[in-house]
Image (tube, rainbow, N blue to C red; front, side):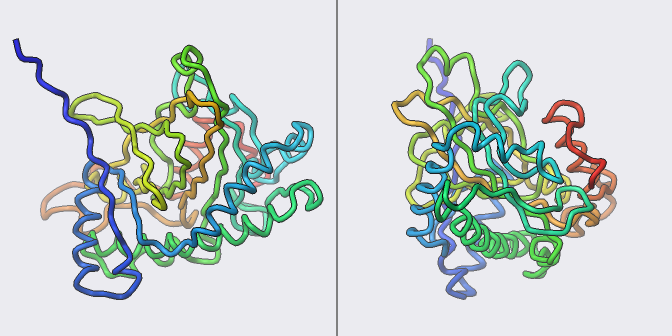
Amino acid sequence: MTIAKVPEINIPVIDISDYIAGDPFRTSRIAEELHAACRAPGFLQIIGHDVPAELRTRLFAKVAQFYDLPLAKKLALHRDLSVTGARGYEGVGTQVLEDGFRDQKEGFMIGPELPPGRFLQGPNLWPDEDDCPGFRSTMDEYYSAMRNLSVKMFRLLALSLRLDEHYFDAFVNSQDSISTCRLHRYPRANVEKARESRGIGAHTDFGAMTLLLQDDIGGLEVFHRPTSTWNAVPYVKDAYVVNMGDMMERWTNGRYMSTLHRVISPVSNKDRYSVVFFNEGLLDQVIECIPTCVEPGETPLHPPVTVESHLRRRFADSYGGGKERESSQ
């Protein structure tokens, strides 16, 4: 009896350097590759970007430095102390994304320094410079670089959907656009503990597009719907892992896929580090079917919804029934 081999999911690696260089012919090819990857599996990796290697190396060093602070110093920056409830430090087990598993990770979140008063808007929390020298300046520099890379990726995304290149510019790059950067540390685990826990439970991302910088420890896995299997996302030197979120799947009428993924607790003699950049966009933006994503006579799969309404619901779900401090937003 021959047992059929389950095909492994292919995570495309796309070189975007020719788009950054302004090559129109190669840009059209890159947009085609992006279109195919966003339809399935909804995950890809990009190389040839313009985020400097020195900045990425320095970033990981500062992330490790922050997490080595005494617990009391980190708790002084706890997310419950932030105006929005969505900035600062969270300890292991704070977030639940998969039933039966509390996430085995520490997190630290920053976002744009916007006046408080609305959902996800407000000041960041920062460690004292004496406690973590160079942390804030490195994070500010990295946040700016990722905001710029995000603009480029959304422009490529627009081209992949046969839209004007600048279709998403206001969404991703306005003064009030929300994008958050999360630093994660996953404590090392033995085989038994890893089997019984999750670094991050199975979930889809809330927003439009996610860009992940991961170290070489591994643990990120993507769910392949056709075969109902989990598949590792390999580490690729200098690459960013890119995936579509729920907002983009809704916006594209299901054309682009928001794929289920998780992180397995690392079985290693080292902790795992990653830095994630989420693009949530403008709170008042109405997410409704993009014109190029519906055929004549076809009815959109979802009714229109504002970004704020969508994000409030998802944040409340993952932090335990609405613990977001909405009264101050």
